[in-house]
Amino acid sequence: MQDASPTKWHLAHTSWFFETFVLEDAVEAYEPFDRDYRSIFNSYYNSIGKPHDRPQRGLLTRPDLDTVLAYREHVDDQLERAIDAGRLDEKSLSVVELGLHHEQQHQELILTDAHHLLSLNPLRPAYRTDLPVSPRRAASPLRWLRGPEGVHTIGHAGPDFAFDNESPRHEVFISPHELASRPATNGEYLEFMNDRGYEQHELWLSEGWALAKSEDWKAPAYWELRDNEWWVFGLGGLRQLEVNEPVAHLSYYEASAFAQWSGARLPWEHEWELAAKRPRDDDNFAESGWLQPLAAGHNAETTALQLFGDVWEWTASSYEPYPGFQPDPGALGEYNGKFMCNQYVLRGGSCATPRSHIRATYRNFFPPAARWQWSGVRLTRDA
Image 1 (spheres, rainbow, N blue to C red):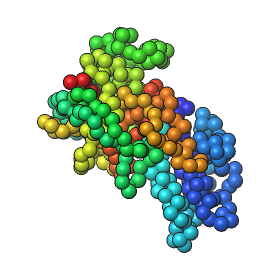
Image 2: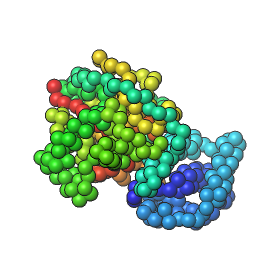
Image 3: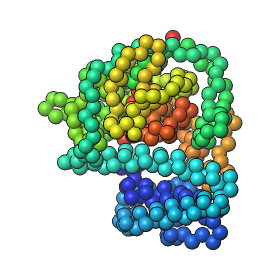
Image 4: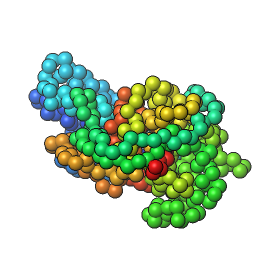
């Protein structure tokens, strides 16, 4: 699958990031670990040189894992020495901070990519056999919560870290709307499937309908029908589908068709962001140890549940620059800005996202056909 990379490549690429953008600029006469790594572990930075083709990463049998780990140790050691010696100025230290958040993104990608790879094995091997068994509990009743209306300000502000695509802060106009109190569940999505949701072209965007037919989609990714019962493959292996858990591994097209079938729509990202300005105490992130979405465990009279963690939530918003957006100067300007076309925004993080990585203004983005992330849907409707 062309969007996935081997774990060994992720380990080397995150080391390459610090070597290329910090050590080579800030450390006088720095000697790279291996000059050939500048190309093979470059992801998409054309300003640095020609990257190794992404679909070919899995064919890099060398360097072996021991060498990659030695590369990582070398970069860590040189970076720590530079920090301890005070050789990094404010600009370089800001790139170190960016690199740490970049590494958190790859920590999540390691899980999603390994998950996809293991799903292709007919034996359905587990990534981990010691994952806890998810609690079997009823999902919170779905309620519709009135969102804020009128002119509001969104986007990041303040001294804390944020990616450049979260700024600048700007005003948006929000029409009357209601947001679902929780993400849609597997059981609710099963109702869509049982009502021939994958066969009703009028529910689908044209491009999504063509893709669903060509790929023979009949269910979310990683679902399997065995003896007339649905099972789902996760990092803990194959298990029976739990109807009360949030539905995951939906493309934008599936999320949109489900919303249309439900008599609702997907939220705009500004509607989502304003709803998400609340404390995060019990959210299900990677540190929770479940590594799968969990059913909402309590009722929500006035508060939206599971806005953070469990599943990334597709929005109706195209991934595009905020008014006044300027990419970072130099090669690091390629980090986000050049992808602002033909992608949609997701919000909130998933069960594989590091807890400290996410915030209300965080904008993830994927092409509409992407399914291998823990991506779900929170319904919204006009009021």
